[in-house]
Length: 108
Image (cartoon, rainbow, N blue to C red; front, side, top):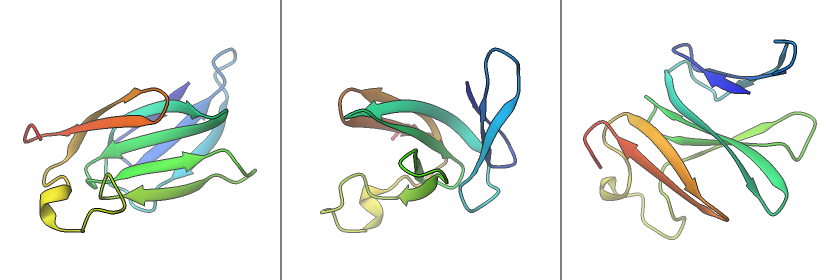
C-alpha cells in the first residue's frame, strides 16, 4: 500500500499488519496529490505528483530508494514552459508498459 499527504511524504505500508515499511522523501514538503505504483521490465517504481509540478519517480533498484524529478515528459524536448505543467499536478495514470499521463489543475 502506498500513501502520500500534505507534508510531501510518501509512505509504503504492510497491508497485512499496518506497519510503515518505508518513508520516501522527494526533496521538498509540497503536497503530494497522487501516487502510482508501476512496474517496467520487472523493475518497480513509485511515481508521485503534486503541488511541486514535478513527476517524482522512486526506483527500488537499491536498498535505499532514489528519486528522480522530471519536469519535461520527454528528455529531448526543450525546457520551455510550454512543455511543463503550469499548475499543480492533480492526477496520474499509466498505460503499460512505459507510458504515464498526468493532468494538472488547469486541465492540461
